[in-house]
Image (cartoon, rainbow, N blue to C red; front, top):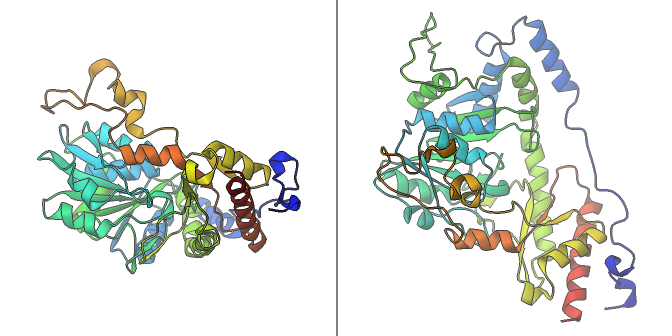
Length: 416
């Protein structure tokens, strides 16, 4: 290694001296649709046109028969769980590395979350890890497609459907993620998406669900609307059981529609960036790039690598710090801990001191959440480095990111 390649953290010249590319997320189309929504003189989703147009567009995009909208990605998952009939005492299997949005709906149905371990390099649940967690109480599986990368969802569906278990896909981070010729969200019984401000596309907040099952579609629309039935000429307010109000307003739908119209192009650019980054660093010792299925096109909501510190020649924190000094957007880790290691699970205080749903009589079992429950997932979080992936990053951003990673790697290899 030459003296010219001295690390920036040691006083050398950083690889990246120009800022990463940026872009405005919202433009004339969003303004046009919002104005049109306001001119309807109603912002109620059932009376206006934009929730309907958003549903039609998103269903068409995914090749699905039906789409319903909700107030958030979290509420989309809760709505899906309500639609498939998850009840107190049921178990729902999901991933340990995810946002609480994947789990909140399970708890609100007074069902018990069960966590399946992950593949060490795709960071997703597998049919094997799901099957290991199935019991006679399993009602549904929420498959999280993490960071734009598809789980092997067809195999999971096969395992579940032969046992009468519903599959709900959490695609909040995986718009336009192609798996075996179809987008994720179309393999299970219901696919759920988020319009949160930090996703591929945004309406501030909001959610969408897709399905080919007309009965589940009707149940989902009703569940998100206090179980009111608006499908006939008159609104039927004789709710069969309690359900939340997760309705989306026409303003959110107007912005959502404008965003959905450009989501494929956004994800195409992210896919190209992420795949090129993989090609540029996959040969480096001690660095493990995300495993993307050969029949998958990841939409890289972010880019997660893992490191072997012994092979790398430094700690994960040292490597990430050195990358930041080179001007690279890099962080040691993703979320702090697996979901089940949070206080509400380890102390079983989801609803205060009542211990429900974990130890309630209607469950008839006891459950314990503790470190060691999903060892591979825990190891992923201890060894990962998060890099950003944006549709507006430039070719220069890509080249400099690769160059910086290779520079830092070469330094630590030279001093091993």
